[in-house]
Image 1 (cartoon, rainbow, N blue to C red):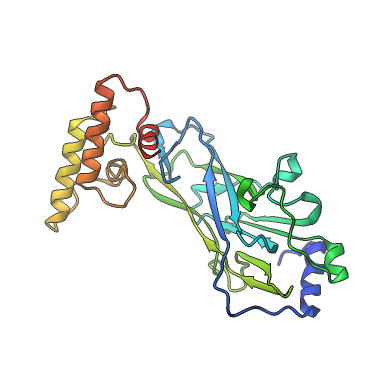
Image 2 (cartoon, rainbow, N blue to C red):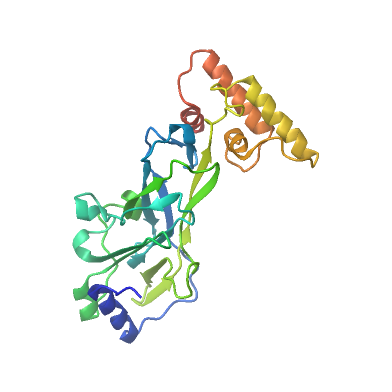
Length: 300
């Protein structure tokens, strides 16, 4: 078993003797979510999903993922994200980073919290905790973490690099906040501790949103993999839609389906075909945006 740092040992010991009471009346939950910073090896769809064409990958590939918390109550005194990727093709090769430790802005005033941070290579998890300062806990005068800006998600809570295996297969991959034990019975899971109106602590599981990563062996929209997005691809999508509508077997392989589902709704249908045709018309009139960029421009 891994040793718990001195700071966390003190937190656990203190919480065992401090009378905190949860409020059963409130259904409020903060939200934790991700965003990925764009680079030349990935495309980002309008909903934030990452699209990867394996033809763009080299021996070394990584994406920077930012983790955020949106706490409209601004009453958190502990924020403890536990982040996982269940597939080693999307791997955490380094510890997560507290932005304040590298001179960047954090959601909370850096002097107000202690930062606990470990990585489990075997389970491919990142374990963090941002907790009220030790002096506040020793004095029993725990306060909500003070904000650097106007909102808790003005800045990333933490960020990390996820490496993408160059041999990754076409499919859907996930980076997500762990909310229940998956690897062993007493695995730590994501939680936040809030102060209620009476100053009591309420520890809950926040609402969480995953980071979806779509991988294909071809570029978005190029179903037949000829380097073009055109009427041929739209036709292939319509053929697939007709086959599935008639309860027949799929006409597409996994990579083709990933490329054909341009609106990322887990369906390859007439809506995707229409989107491909619209993009083809855009290219035919001199448009230069890549497909994902074009989709984002249309959703603004």
